[in-house]
Amino acid sequence: MLYHFLYPLSQDFSAFNIFRYITFRTFAAFLIATIFSIVWGQYFIKFMKRKQFGQIVRDDGPESHLKKAGTPTMGGVFIIGTIFVTMLVTANFFSIPVLVTLGVTLSYFLLGFCDDYLKVLKKNTDGISAKGKLLWQFATALLAGYFLISNGVIDTNLYVPFVKGPVLDMGWFYVLFIGLVVVGSSNAVNLTDGLDGLAIGPIVTSAASLGIIAYAAGHKEIAAYLFIPYVENIGELMVISAAIIGAGVGFLWYNSYPAQIFMGDVGSLSLGGNLGIIAVLTKSEILFVIIGGIFVVEALSVILQVGSYKLRKKRIFRMAPIHHHFELKGWPEPKVIVRFWIISIFLAMFAIATLKMR
Ligand code: 57M
Image (cartoon, rainbow, N blue to C red; front, top):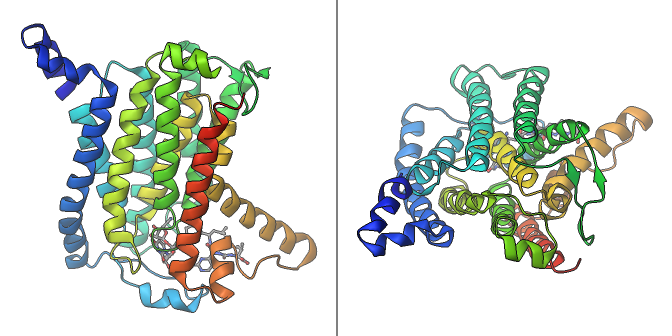
């Protein structure tokens, strides 16, 4: 809104020209989101505590988790709330990529909210069925994919790291591919969200990398220089990325070990979906496998564990997702978390470096 109200004033006062710049609005988004989430977070936690809306902890997990029972959850409400408030101030709503990203995020937010509402508020341990969740997630992602392609916002070419230009035109199969990327990302982030700060760390590093890629892809000269596909208006996604980073840092203020709040499905499903659709819009789905390597490994550990148990009646890990494996090996929780963060920072840096290696 700030952009829409203040930028037109630049005709009379040239100083307002600054609102035109994505870089200025990116810094503004980061500052607003960080301060807003830290301030709002404490009231949200107090509210959830007063209402006794706490986490129910399963008793078949690592023993150290039993003491976490009753920790307020659904912190995703203040993360996504912060992102939307920040966007109201700093975003350019004429950008279709911005609208689609916010639309997908909102849809997954509603799904996660209903699931948490049933589990936490109504004390129904199952929440929404796995089938129900997948149906909603795929419907949203496929609709977004169809909209983007039929309106020519993105093409149907597949790009991979280290290669100049597209490697394959997937035609309408690309819509299905978009579905897999967005739904996969949402669920992988959800699986990762099992230790204090474990998910939000890689969410922040992923948002930072994708934000930089969005800026480059939305800038004709930089995109041509790096041999990455130019997508009109995509640079605006850097502003959303900054809001995610700010809101994430603010959430981490309270979610860092020992956590005062968890993000809940309302946070993990929506932030995962959000990163997935940004990866699609920036045409960096395969690069996102590197950027979000922690999420990929967490999801793979579950697939391998379940597959191995079904086929051989043997487990590969002491417990999946893999963060539980390290916990059961005796690593203290903060050590697992910080080591995973270190890996995610490394992966984010590496992914950015590959932009020049084409
Ligand atoms: C979410 N959620 C946490 C919190 C968070 C197929 C199977 C592998 C699925 C998987 C699963 O259910 N994953 C989804 C994991 C839960 O956290 C809540 O859920 C939200 C995210 N959706 O925001 O609201 C617990 O995680 C801990 N936590 C923290 N700090 C945080 O900041 O400590 C979360 C956030 C919280 C808290 O203890 O209660 C969860 O783990 O439930 N299932 C599993 O992960 C289970 N694995 C398993 O059964 N493995 C099997 C097979 C199926 C692969 C095996 O290895 O043989 C484990 N989870 C638990 N107990 N709790 C193991 C058993």
